[in-house]
Image 1 (cartoon, rainbow, N blue to C red):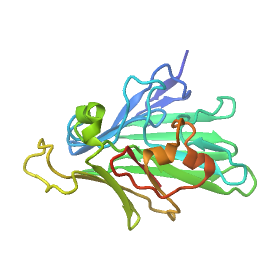
Image 2 (cartoon, helix red, strand yellow):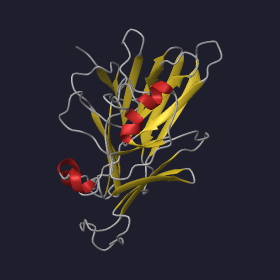
Image 3 (spheres, rainbow, N blue to C red):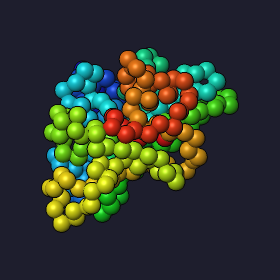
Amino acid sequence: MKYGYFDDANLEYVIERPDTPTSWSNYIGSRIYGGIVTNNAGGYSFYRTSGAGRFTRLTFNSIPADQPGKYFYIRDADSGDYWSAAWQPVGKPSAKYKSVCRFGLGYVTIDSRYSGIKSVSTYYVPLNQAFEYWRLKLVNESGRTRRLAVTTYAEFTSEWQIFQDAFNLQYSMYILRTRYKDGFAECSINRNLPEDTANFANRDQSRWSWMTLIGSKISGYELDREKFIGPYRDYASPVCVESGRCSNSEAYGNNSCGAL
């Protein structure tokens, strides 16, 4: 079964079918800041080192695979239908949803079409910077007026040390707090401790990460994962996206996320 090909002219690998047997990954970033992005927008981000500086979460060896990630959810305000800018996590039927992923040197572009809407999402890290861009372009190809809402999603870790985040939840969730201020979703770990800039390996210091949006107005947010997804739901059907409403939650001693 053929899923893609090498585009030698553009120095890219192109995946024409999103339902690959396993996730295909591409690295973005530099020695300062890095991340993984898959063909279905799964992946994680880290500062300096993926083991001790992991601040967004990917659950390995899980079912369904390759989740969570760096997601854009798109919702039609008139019909209530919603989908993701990559095939996953919503997973619309392949007969109606088309997606092409391009892996380049330090960037990933996912070009998708569903319900008369074309979306192009691009992920990259600017040179010598300690942050990443997710850029989304929407084109209405339906021939009629559309009212669309877009929601971002990334899941913050409760501790940058990946083993502590995975296994020591009773403690790590206790030291995490999120808040929304001046257009920024802020996630802090050990916020009351000083930073120890000379010793990155020291876990007993404050850690900070942020998410924001430019180019459009932020109409709501969820910073508590359970508020975003809802009880007994998953990334394919978050209650926040399905309902089209945010409760403007903040997380304190709970799992957190960045949904704007």
